[in-house]
Image 1 (cartoon, rainbow, N blue to C red):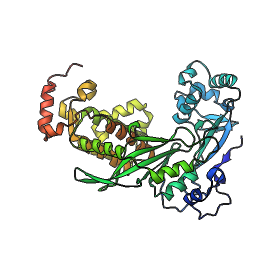
Image 2 (cartoon, one colour):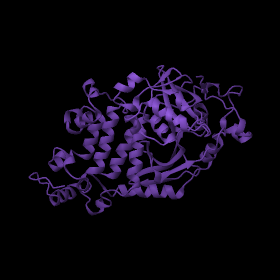
Image 3 (cartoon, one colour):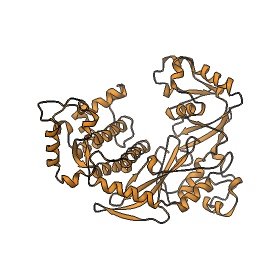
Image 4 (spheres, rainbow, N blue to C red):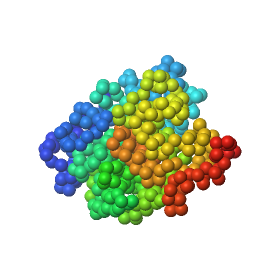
Length: 443
């Protein structure tokens, strides 16, 4: 198999000619674009060669060209991470590859309980005789190669260096690459700022571009809290706009350039501000706080937090057992700075309600019981971790949590107007729930 390296992009183009000038001055349908300069003042975690840490190769193959080693197939308990061979070259995979393959051909992982991978691939090929897929391979600085998503060859693909150059031209903030996608933060054309609970916020929007061809390019509304530069990215459907980038060999850059030039969404920003303002008037519930805590534990165990280390013993545990260890061990929590600070913010729910395990309570009950902070404080904590203490994968995970949370009504919406002091609200809820330490409510 001969893969087409992306590093060929930019041949013959003057190095100082910006993407923006190319777009404004010519027809982009056949334009060749410059490679981003390696000394550009942007930082991309996990990102080698071009000065950014990764490079990519593309090719078009048929599904029968994919192979899974039979011995590894028989002994691998986690099929999501099974390596795949393409014409003799073994490539790592993860959930993004398999999800894209399932989506392309309309099947799922259950098929592999009854058939070997080669059988499934061959049967698909027998029906889709002329069908092809585009594959994207990520080459990292450590020398490893990973197979990202598969996609339809007739769909345009956003080339990595092209996108970096364009986003850099538009003053990208917090530019990151992770798992086939580039994300960055930008200011809308009109700007705008507002004050919430004494903090100044600026309107922003985040751009998420898949460079492996899987999924659509999306824009998400965001707010930047000035005092600590926390980016609140509402990564959910309610605050998302998707871009249609054309077909086949169309360049994706003109559409993305127009969006960066003209993006504005007054109604959306108003709705996001209203939800954040409401969070200042709402106590956080046990259920909402626990949801964030479980995400933080996953981040810690998966090395998605900066300056965070996991013992060999915990790494040898199953994911569920390791997560349970952090849920119930105060010693483990206190040894992890982010988890320790979380508990100082919310209070120890086990002590607040006299239960060793809050999962003993039904979800309905957990949603009625407060922790010691408001939703505003809880969301600020999450975005502080996302902006300053998380790797790209963890940052995206928390943006998803924030987007989902802010898009829905809070469990204890408006309760701070009724109970300005936590102690009063907590005691009332504890007594009304029968959680006096002598009994456990019936689910």
